[in-house]
Length: 351
View (cartoon, rainbow, N blue to C red):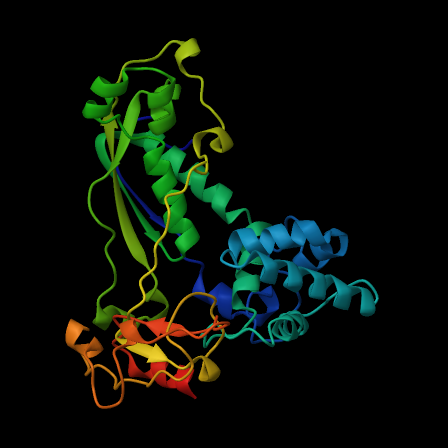
């Protein structure tokens, strides 16, 4: 509201959280420090995370953790949520400190081996902070507001730090792109084109285009500022809208369930019976499917950087090729690995 529409030629949005705020243990952001469970950007307004957790249901907390943190694992999100609320009940109805919450999440993830070297509660803390401070909603408002005050041809550069932020920026661009002219000729202006290019279902007089690939920090910058390692600069440009305004009856958009339908007929799948590397069933995880018998010899590993060739399956002194080995009745388990360049994975399966 400070600037008039079309008044600016450029806008810069830095989505990073203030490092001094993160490092201040009194604010409740840092999982490694023992501070009050607050997490508000403005501690004088709104509700603290401690207060919100008191009234949260398992379903609500699961949604927050899955939506803004553990988005790749819905079951883990639910387990973390149930563990937090159970420990909260055991503690008399409240979790007061960041360290206590961090230990609870660590306990919920004790058997999780995801290769992450950071604190197990990092993503849970991130999800709670993003939710409590409406960070994703604020990003949507900031992008819309930036386009309102930009002149045609003006640019908005956004520095993001999380995948969720990058996804939100991409969704904003997709929702404001001009329709592809080939699809316009093929489909015509109508409901289907509105589904593909949501701008057509609006009366907005501008379009948005991402004009270059996101830029990543160089090695020197990361060495100077370690927290910049996950950053990316997205460059968006505003243009005058060229697409026609559509009548209301042409703006009918179907739901996602109607637009994305699983195929009713699946093509038949015929698996192969030969492989350059065969791992014995008795020394590997059980995998249902066809493969060589338990007595199959284990071929030597492919030299680093080489691709498997037919010569790997040629007869040798150690036995016939894998493709010719008989399969005993009842054999169900075998592991066949192709195009493998990492010896460690095969050795792990053999142990």
